[in-house]
Length: 305
Image (cartoon, rainbow, N blue to C red; front, side, top):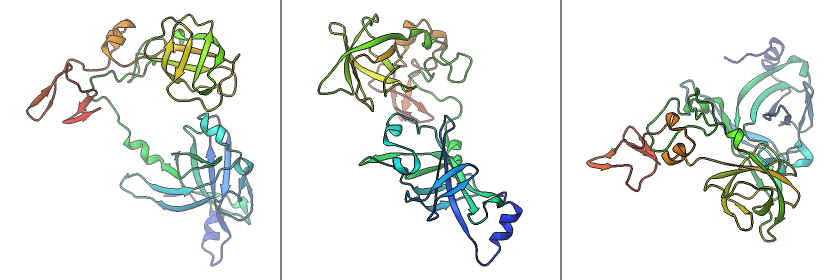
């Protein structure tokens, strides 16, 4: 049951209403951006909801059987309208953002609001420099996330997490970071390939992470390393950084984990290994052992890659 303020409820019972929808987007750092379906900007609870961004909520379907609500929205989030830029998307600032759809009386905002639906911001795309969010996920989507453990050949722990947690690893990953400085950058791939000075991690393990600590790429995002040349100190990232890497920028690098038993043994952390690498996996009459060319594990009879 939705909570509707008494004054707003009385207004909704009238033959003619002056209502509009407000889409409120809250970033994980607390910043709030707003859009409205009205043809004029709306200021509500200190937040300006922009009308010039083409926001439209086409379908909101809510079921009572705990199935995932369907909310299809289309919101243009161009920089000059809502404050959300393509650079923010590339830097991952919209990751874990939440949305809330409200209904208010724009002629009398003091009546309060009714929450139509809320959830997590799903896919966010950038096309020709314009940001748009076509996917609004209901909170019911969280109920579809796996809870508990399932069989897997590789370790299910999150590298660096406390050993006591459900996905506990026990390795102190923060102590593995090594700081370095970019000395030069590839002319052809300035967002991905660069050389470093002051790097004492030699050789870099096959799995590693890079996190920039200065420049426009600085933030909490860690990029996976594709390759490293010990002779030249050149590092290549698997995924390009959103902004060009420049000489003089600082970063830090640490080894990661490929979830294999060998990696866990190398870290001296075998007691916390959360995988079943020695359990044969059966499918019909065939028995697949860890030496077979299959990765992953299984849940019931289903092979999990």
